Length: 430
Ligand code: GDP
Ligand code: IMO
Ligand code: MG
Image (tube, rainbow, N blue to C red; front, side, top):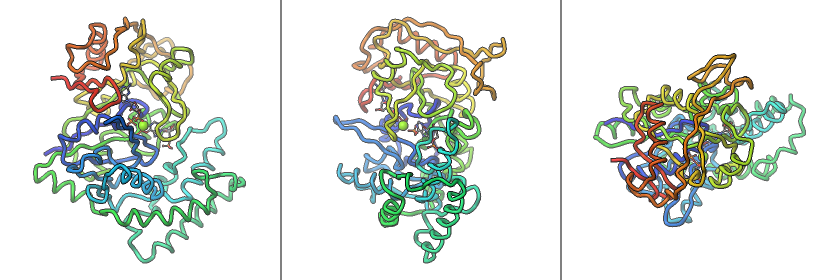
């Protein structure tokens, strides 16, 4: 069998968690392959909303195994909070959750470093979620990180102390008053003591060599879905660098983040919102800094699932979407949140970029240049509540025309249409 992949085609928060939850009954395994608790994936069913950060979005289906792969980075403190919430909801993650021993640990000093680096950047700050993502991946690539499996070794305490001292040497060079950097509202030592305690919860989980587990499952004919975090425009190589996250968020990361060979990749589901959002700093050519942007934010409840920050909103950006489709080899498009624009008279789409008197159809190196501006096409709004639609024939013509336009531009079929946040508000196109 092959590994299907579901990932975001914009700047994150496309609705990946919701769609993974909808797909889960068709898969034996759901596996996260990159990112960490900077992710916030929202699932809604039975009138309840759940937000996951580290744990895959298949966890509510007890028959499905959920894997946190080696490419993911884990903060034991945030992980424990997530586990406790799941348990309150009757989920038993110790049964169907498996964690790679090769996944790296986010240490308390990684979070402190993240805060220090952001402060030192001043107005140029990235707008990080401050979960320690950049510093943890830096240590991984520098070959000095600590991994989940290290927690089981006798010398963990010594290694942890060494790492902490190294980090403090870097932090001291910035000459900031570190007492002002609270982590989740706690001083460093309060947080550190909770962090160390929470490692026990992590150790009590199924810690595995997940690459073997996955490849053996594929050999047995099991279905696997890899769940992306963040989005293609936040990819460290191809996104709007330096305003990106510190991992590769694209399909190639499935191979390195789970240990599966490229020929084992199957369908690639690319999720995109009918408009665009972005949290944090960085270029956003189709951004709306006006009443329409506010309307998208308010109707779409566009506030970060991880940090609660208001999300910047704008029109759909086709050059960026086409770029993301190219990088990921997307076979199926999934559109979400079109219902947010149900009342709009007119909908715009950024079709090309104008830069130095030339029209660009792609996402260039110069994306950070403020002189790069989109050109727009105009589409008639459907002015109909689409949230009750259960089949394509329930959808208004203007909306079908909008889907048709996107398909013709991208040359990829839209096979899933999400019309609301609930699991049930999903149309699978036959
Ligand atoms: P993720 O990070 O890609 O999983 O997305 P988030 O969970 O951060 O943000 C997506 C938000 O949109 C969540 O609040 C979802 O419940 C919600 N959502 C997902 N699909 C739809 C949809 O089709 N319509 C509406 N109105 N909300 C949706
Ligand atoms: P999901 O999986 C939206 C953004 C941050 C910041 C930049 C770098 O829910 O789609 P980092 O904490 O990685 O150093 O932040 O990336 N960012 C996200 N934006 N959704 C996410 O994840 C994100 N994860 C990181 O806001 O601009
Ligand atoms: Mg999110």
